[in-house]
Image 1 (cartoon, rainbow, N blue to C red):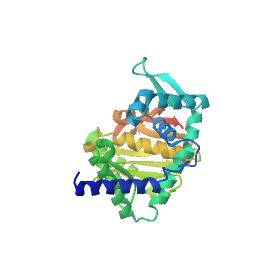
Image 2 (cartoon, rainbow, N blue to C red):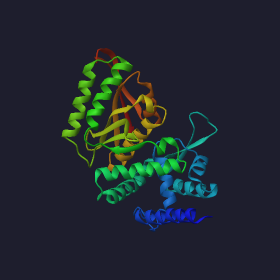
Image 3 (spheres, one colour):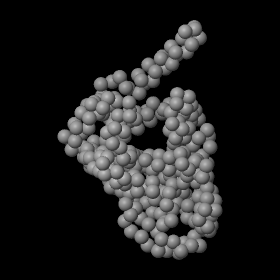
Image 4 (cartoon, rainbow, N blue to C red):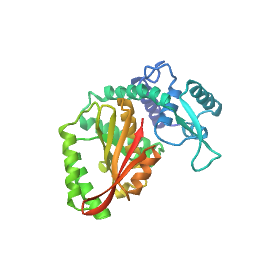
Length: 307
């Protein structure tokens, strides 16, 4: 090994030591919980809307199968976990958190969120953006999936809300034939979000790759216990990368960590790609109602998710 390569390896090792210390991984209770970090990570995977089997956890987290089995058995004993046959393959059992398991995850999500918020609080918005972009570069260079490494999610900043209105108007006119009254509705929703923005209970996320916006979603407070998902959009160039799923997952995770009990959303029949995402995350159709809007005869649909 030459001296240049050796010095680079030491630099990477030094950064690893620095970062693990800053985010508290070495502490006995990194999230103020008596759960080991591995158990917290498994809870996180189960809480984020994916249909996972035990073998998926073993493979994706690179863990010993026996170790994972013992953790899952402990979760079942606590009443946090249930197993059920897969909808697509009855021979395969998938894992799902119970209501008690989701409640156990809420303070962990909040502790993790708050920990990172404190870490980046001294940074400017530009510096935070550079930090996230650099992390994406690390992921790409070390072989992370394109979905996770190339696309980053960030909260909104000046200019984003105008872009959301513009792209909704353009895409729905082109793809659905909706008229300008739809863009007017989006503008009203967006303006209300900015005027009444409550950062403790509401969020807007922008999906971005190399500085280019690829998608958006907004979560607003409908009531003390109900959050509403609004303005989900994915650019045509980013479809198939899992951007929509990540945006919806971000909303669900934030809603749970904030203490909402339910989520709801309103959409229209025929938007099948979005509906597939909602249903894969546990949303269920609550009601349908025909209406004439945006120059079209449409069927409005209300979906709900119990958190």
